[in-house]
Image (cartoon, rainbow, N blue to C red; front, top):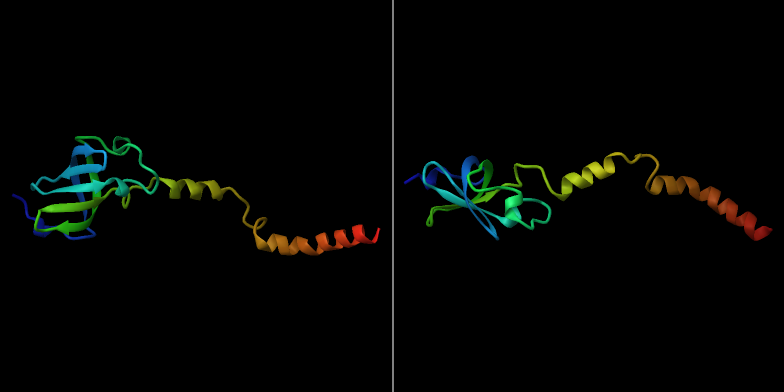
Length: 124
């Protein structure tokens, strides 16, 4: 049997996906310790199918979130090490927008012209 006491939260570990369930993926380590990547720890975005992220017999890097020393099991995170999901898409979506031309500064700059235009419409 492996040494569960060697594992600490925050560690980065390398293991083999040993099983998939609708709620997550099980990972086995060479020292006999195992852990679970809950479906919520696979991605920042919605996960419909665990197999879209990992498959049985894949070797993956994961981060230890918590250690259950009594049951000799680890709680693991895949998303902590692998960029995916909504955060990445949002970042790239807004990358191309001009920074100076949107927001309250541009509205404040245009406001005097709009007011001037409305005054001329009312006076006519």
